[in-house]
Amino acid sequence: MKSVIITGGGSGLGAALAEEYGKQYKVILIGRSLKKLNSVADSLNSQGIKADCYSCDITSMDEVQHVFGPLFQREDVHMLINNAGSGIFGPLVELSVDEIETMLDTNIKGTIFTTKTSLPYFKERKEGKIMNIISTAGLRGKVNESVYCASKFAVKGFTESLVKELDGTGIQVTAVYMGGMDTPFWDHSDHVKDKSRFKTPEQVALQIAKEDQGKPEIFIDR
Ligand SMILES: NC(=O)c1ccc[n+]([C@@H]2O[C@H](COP(=O)([O-])OP(=O)(O)OC[C@H]3O[C@@H](n4cnc5c(N)ncnc54)[C@H](OP(=O)(O)O)[C@@H]3O)[C@@H](O)[C@H]2O)c1
Image 1 (cartoon, rainbow, N blue to C red):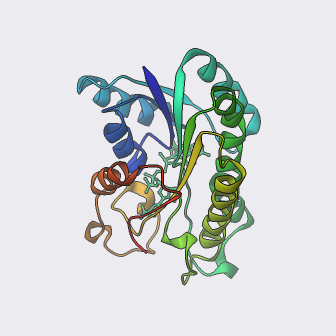
Image 2: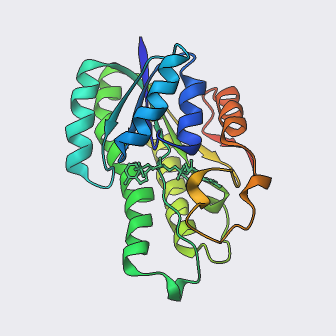
């Protein structure tokens, strides 16, 4: 059975995408907290969806290689969804160096590390799909989101470049842009007053899966 690797699969959009893509794939969930990943995997298994999970901090290339290498040997991985992300909001002067590095390391380097590690396997098979979950924060600047936006603009550039670099190889690369979602993403911040007005991750995951037809860009919101 073909598999999809979903980073950040232990909560929010990643868990919703796992349920949606689990209709056609075996799902492999990646994240740092095994507790969260196990709980999503158990729920998927109880719905008849095949799901495994592995703890991996995507900001570490060593960890990514250690986890992804054996996975690609063992599983028929057809798709990588780079969904894991971190957002810390506020005026730039108030962000700590740690907070800045967490966002840049997770959103930019994490996406690059997992993609770089997966690509040789996709290239060998001459097929594969890479989907990068960005945000409307990758389309325009926003107040109190300077570093988050910088990280998502970077992933936009990374994705657009790979679309060109991999043209004709059989490997599809897709950028996905969406606005706010009602997920745990906002739980440690007062940047958003009422996240319940946002779309649910299930609504967004359903729309992504419907529009996932080989296009380089999917706009859930603009
Ligand atoms: N919520 C929104 O309004 C919104 C809007 C547009 C775009 N997005 C984007 O959507 C994606 C999913 O976010 P979400 O809303 O579903 O938030 P979420 O529930 O907080 O999910 C983020 C996931 O990323 C994982 N993660 C964070 N750092 C990681 C690391 N170093 N290594 C591996 N996994 C890591 C987290 O799991 P662990 O902590 O267990 O590692 C968590 O499960 C993100 O890229 C976010 O930027 C969100």
